[in-house]
Length: 440
Image 1 (cartoon, helix red, strand yellow):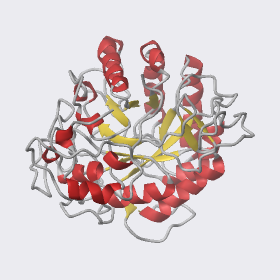
Image 2: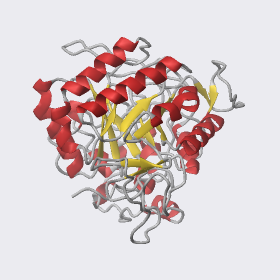
Image 3: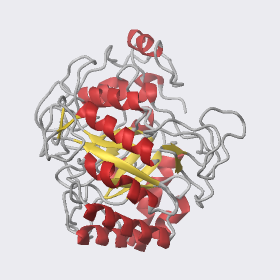
Image 4: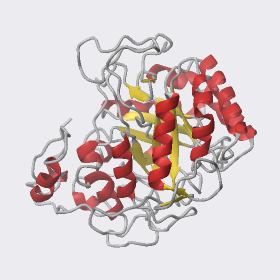
């Protein structure tokens, strides 16, 4: 889908990026007189090239480490035959595979650590989180900010898993599909009503059991969309480095599969979503418990992570070094046959309830080197930002467009953080994200 010419970057910036980018996005030049930015900036307003990742969400949602989803590909693509029952490519296209025999659904599936759409084409999720799921796509049928950005996936932070919201939920999903965006629906709260309670940082299995019960009760609402959707079971639930995390999710997988869900199930790590050891120690066990073998693991990168340091193969409770931690996750995924993605990160300005100095660009670069997907928090989080501000309210906002999905007709509608995520040469969404092949 072509993007509006008005929101494309300036020519000098674009040429520099296209020279090293394989993106198929349009390379038109703005001609409407709108202000454009000649360089991408990191979350602090510096030109792209910095290092680091993010702080946790401070806006609505779970009120703490909220967000994340992008199931990424952590292994190499498989174009030949497979012992898992796939027959490999039928037309010689690199990375194209047949659905494994154990996968009985009609949507996305995983194979040998990679993610594929229903046509058997490899898919690397690259997109954004949205805090206000019921507003982000409200009334947006054209020139929608998220699709304009190049994102191929949107993680909806669901806070109303109730049948009374059926039409709104289905309308939201339908519009994302129309805009060629994968809907990643997230269980952010385990109670309902006007003041629901969030799953983030809860370690009690009751929290997970309750949100799973909500998903089961809502199966008929989501069932018509299984070709396109992913289900993120519970935002940031569970203990770190814990067998309790593993057994609880194995039970959750059984309940959801028995209810009829065949789509990918996205599972956050424990430790407020930030613990890599849950995946490294127990990821294969949890993945193998799924008869569909269709689980994607999602790590959130905030204050429990650090820009530098030495990776420890055993759990110490110390901050996780970015490069070493992501490499260890990719290695575990390749060995265990499961995909891992960075499902949440922020502007990296030492802000929020779980502050870090890791910059967004460094996460994007590390993920790119590993073939790992990522999602940035958040398109619509926080109060309206000051475009020139590098501290205070709105740090986590990617755009100035809330609540109508960030109109994004011009690059000046993006915050400094948003400019990095969307327009960083080579690594930004506009240049690197590729849509799934299954959309009408």
